[in-house]
Length: 511
Ligand code: TAP
Image (cartoon, rainbow, N blue to C red; front, side, top):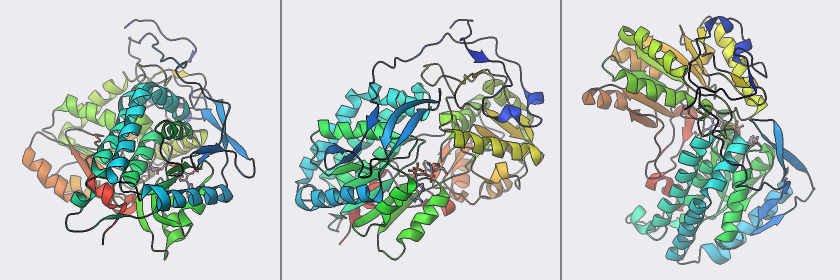
């Protein structure tokens, strides 16, 4: 560690694109800067060679889009264009579905399950071998800190392929007493916050169950999906088993509503999830929807406070808060609220916001200008509705889409910042007095994806967890993921589970 400051930083309190610091009352809440900063430790970009242009991955080959249109993907940390990406149309989707249908009928569904398993193990190994390339590409394309893509996204993605490889030749044990079969061609659409990990959550169980896939990545983060296409080629996966169609949401919809698609898997916003459910209604397709969230992280007065502070920080600032299960509402018991908030502010003051490629960075870039604007608008609404905003006085880079870690206190449950998914580094703190009040407030949301409990009492954990309407409840930890554990929501957070044996069931027909 060195007391040197990295160059080209803008003064505290100035944000490039109308971020939180330009919101009313924000400047008055800035805290003192930590005296320490770290010398830059950038990961090398040389490990990846991003090509100027990428096509679609259909039937084992890279193809130009039929109408020749392209879009551009940007580095959110610098606003520089990274590559031109094929803008796949419904006609391209049609070609991909045709290839996937043929591959399912002629090859993949006929292959001995243990042979399918070998391909999945091979994909997992190649992903591990090329993990640095994947991590750097993911960070450049998404803005997430290299520490997270290197230590979380890529290893977890490889672990999903490894885990489901183990199931591929044991499907009869996954559903005892039934004869499980593959469904056919599955259509999958994924978001930009965990591009490679969401791909792995979707493709690994689908292939293990004997299905073939047409997947559309998000428009702002296509690069790791296209790198994954290269892994499929390297693993000599039969042509057409995996197809990647880049393009806009309308192309995603044309994939999902195609009559040849037997199952739909979607991760993204609740608004688009509703459109998809409406679009495929009456078609008899299997459907899983992983949608938004507004998780409560509940801290009781007997919790280990420093440990809880770390958990709350991880819960909301991991991946800039662009996490469906982010702990975006802090529910803290009134008797410890002042002390807890003081410790939380101290810890927020040490977060390093900046270059995602720097191994010391805690909070990277927001994925897109649109998302920055959405966060800024919701933060401004919090101020306008009367909540108290506080931000540490960290410097922000002079270019790119960055947003200061933000804490609101004095939040009422009716405030938009307490009800709407912000999908950014913004925490809304609310107090409670009794266990019943904590549960009532935690469940007072249209969502139901995740929650956290911080207490030293095991009996309280069991009691509270059972009464929370959330698909995942963490106790004395947060944002822990494992391929063996199912993940999914209640209410407007969607339905169906991904991960674990439950995630496999979603891709099987039981007779
Ligand atoms: P969305 O706008 O919903 O986009 C997600 C994906 O759907 C993208 O690939 C998008 O394509 C595509 N899409 C957009 N409109 C579509 C349509 N009409 N038909 C079919 N596909 C369409 O969400 P986002 O902004 O990417 O991601 C943020 C949201 O996802 C948050 O609400 C977050 O909570 C949720 N999310 C949930 C989870 C889980 S596990 N529950 C995980 C991650 C994210 P384009 O990129 O081309 O627009």
